[in-house]
Image (cartoon, rainbow over all chains, first blue to last red; front, side):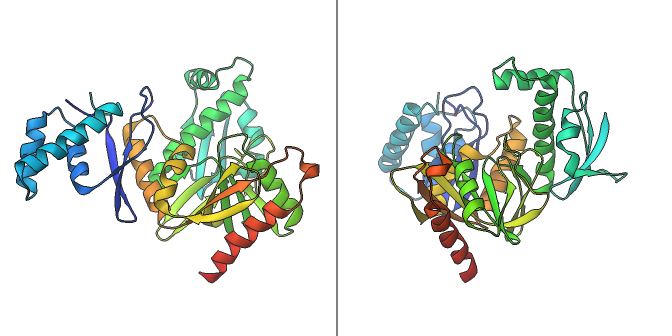
Length: 87
Length: 246
């Protein structure tokens, strides 16, 4: 799976926002508001990857229980798929 | 034809097929200057603008002028300058921008400012260029300024951007940068080239550190004659008294 959009991140008032760069023929024209973990997921999704790869990467980067991180990643991917951001 | 204009602090050498752009740029013409950028248009560029307009009724000369401004805007990204949709009003060397989708009332509000605030002038009525330079953003008058042709060949320090919306009464409130991002994205020119779009996003992020943001509800009666100065005076007092405190 992969993001349909190339995202550029910017920081506003200590929040991370991600702006899509290639929306011309696509449906998503909004801006993503992300926490640090979600921003890391978006970064990983800029290339072809799998749910398991994302989980393993986050486990290496952050302290956390595998089950917790798995649940978080699954919820995040679900939201991104519903928004049409991940295919 | 070939001619040069001074725009957003730079010299542009323009090579055009028609003289429409030359005529509209008369107040910005410079003679025999060393150009910072050279912009050339082609029939392909004109056809691209025709497709964007979605109409066959516009002249090739007019469409070419749109192509010229698109190319100027994209070239100036190299100089921390980008294009935005909005009406910019100046008071002295400071300015504020009202931005909103077309038809909301930017032009009407601009006209009310001109009627009720004697020292107000229009920097650019429709498509200003903005240059971010450290802690300040400068906004420029250009010949591309909307059908009312309201512009002043000058620059001013942009102090605030106000997002306008129609409502049942006139009110204005300050909002934070987070609340502004989506609205701002909708009014900034977004190049199709990804690297240029990346530069635009970076400039937008820099812009947001230099200006205040406001949201204004505007009671627009459509007929200017029916409107008093309340909206203009309310926004003037809010936007410029905040500036004075800074």
